[in-house]
Length: 139
Image (cartoon, rainbow, N blue to C red; front, side, top):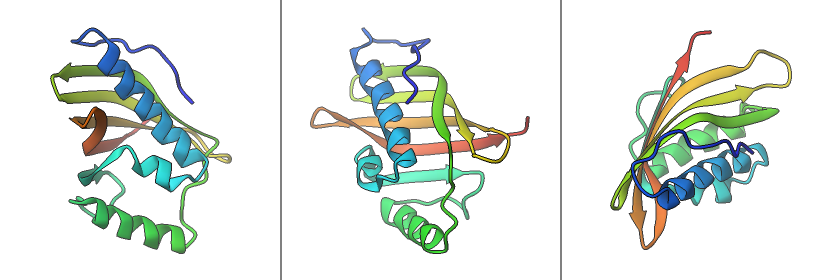
């Protein structure tokens, strides 16, 4: 799990730290194949746009259908490390934005780096990702 420092925040840091911890927990959950824990960080209406996805996924149920098909075919990525680095987090009331570089290290190949923006909304005191955008970077 990546517990690196948050480089830029616009609030006192408590909310930004909670968002950062949630991001780290989400990717740790992916590594341990704990989908329920991963999903606790996603809003039911999350939109997901990633370079490798088949177009934008506009709800959590669309994301679930994609993951069910991927995992059922044996195509779930095997990774030694998945970590958010160089986090920049801003919070304004019940809204927040996190920008970071996601590093995915497979066991038998070079690391892949993606530029990520996550938009958060606080609901009943908890932070949820309402929009996730990731772009694979050429290295």
